[in-house]
Image 1 (spheres, rainbow, N blue to C red):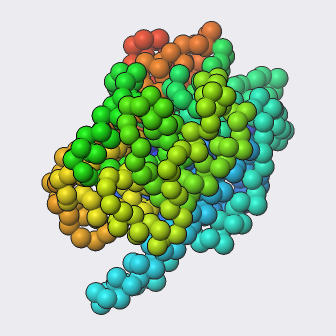
Image 2 (tube, one colour):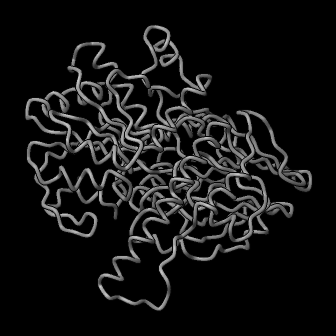
Image 3 (cartoon, rainbow, N blue to C red):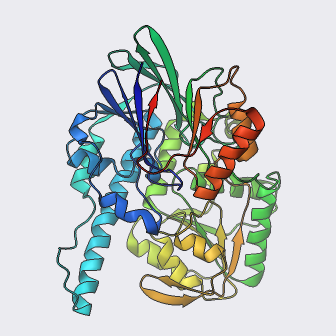
Length: 468
């Protein structure tokens, strides 16, 4: 029996997730993500290691850009198969990919103009990684699957999707291969959520698998106590109002923005914070919020009860959606404290950069981070305490109050990941630790071996293994 697995991304780093599985003549790509760390972005432009036309299907764990953001390039270069995922993931991914394509086009145009002003002439024209037209072509290939529904991928190869509890519609993907009368089960964890988080259900657990690819974003640490996350947000808000400053929240359009609205609504209902103006300055986040309204069947018990007792937290009193660029700019003219929730979550692009330019050098303002900041991103530089930072081509002094709200993570920590693994009733043949920075991945690999005695390894970029 021979099953081949190649690690094409999110190995010893946390973006660019891509894993190629080959069995019985069928080639399946699990995720096709964009690299977002500065030191790895060149990989986005590299040719795919295998011809895209030879890939039979893409299995998409969820709609975050680091898992789906390279799909338009894959399709442009020849992929013609189905992109399988849940309905919620498909709806959200289409929004995210079209937005990403627009940003790719805009960034290329801004770079071209900047080079023109500076008199720089490169050997190659400045072109976007992919275009809106590429993204639209990609969106036509999405095919929806239900949780726990088995789908045939080829001779003796089938897949089933299970709730990962990470973001709305996210999945742990199970692939079963039947070969020469033998069966092998491979689990792709995608990003595993935390138990007891708001809105989404807890991650599915499994009693058996032969091989597991497990994420390790927080594989070297345990999250700080999360019970007071709501009150921590309340303290930041009240402090900013007292100082007369604004609150800028770099936030992922998917899940994090919706959780912020959930917590603000609860804080208001309990009179912990006063009413003040909140702007969701992300057309993408606004559209994704509508997808949440379309899929109440995916909410957990607490969220369902919240909606029964009150109204939807996505209908927050005083919430304003900044759809156009002019509406975004107009926020600067609003008097009094405002909260601006804007993308991107790691400050690598989007409207949050403009709000940082207007707010980060004023000591009465607050920049509140509520998500993971990967090494090499602008957000990571800011939370690490740098005094000056380059934003939109110019150096800015950081004088605003920088706050991190811990416990907001949609990723399971070291102990929660191990608890998930320990639900298996028998040791797997092998565990591959992926989707974590080098230190985190290696630390978690060691931790698995120490705690279980299982075989656990940390692959290198483009490593190939044979699963027996």
